[in-house]
Image (tube, rainbow, N blue to C red):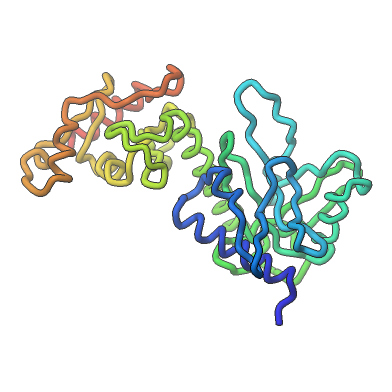
Length: 306
């Protein structure tokens, strides 16, 4: 029979898997904060107040670590960031091993426990990464290094392995690239969603689970940026239509449907899309977050050419 530590971690990972099926990348805190049913009771994935977290049911070690993106105007007290060899550096609580949370983290480091990294990508929103492993602790600098593993359960170390997880340099570089890509995508989406108040810029639909951050200049283009001004909040349907050149947005923020789509006659969904023709998209309040007109012009020119 599995011990309680293992069963808690398995239950936590299953909860995160279910959460990401609903939220593609950036997850609201109130979703993460919901208790996870366990043995007739419940445990929590993390704490709002602290970054290094151990559920009360877990004998020792930690379940998760968390970084936050502060609200505008507040100073970010965290010094965490990506490391050169893959993975991330994470700040311990100030006070070294005198702090109980740091001692519990060291236990998980020594046992090579799989943990959760809740990476803040916007105020109140997090990108869960798991399973992660602590592969270095520097109590002098009050930092630890977190190795990232892929999310489908294959244990492949990103940083220098300290256990039995061996990967070659090519595979390591691939995993590092994939992790960083997912993090950047989550950050971009979270900031775009926040700028558009979690509403579709075309339809006004206020359901975050159905919204995506559409790039005006595609992210694989050399001129693409991760600035909010290169993104628009759209439903999955309108995002696909925008990328496919079925819908365009001009430099005055006006929506255009191509002639073929306008001439097609089908059910109410298509008719509702036709009603957008000639309308203007909703814009972020902040002028610097509004769609970049040069980017719109480039994308709209490609729309006209199709």
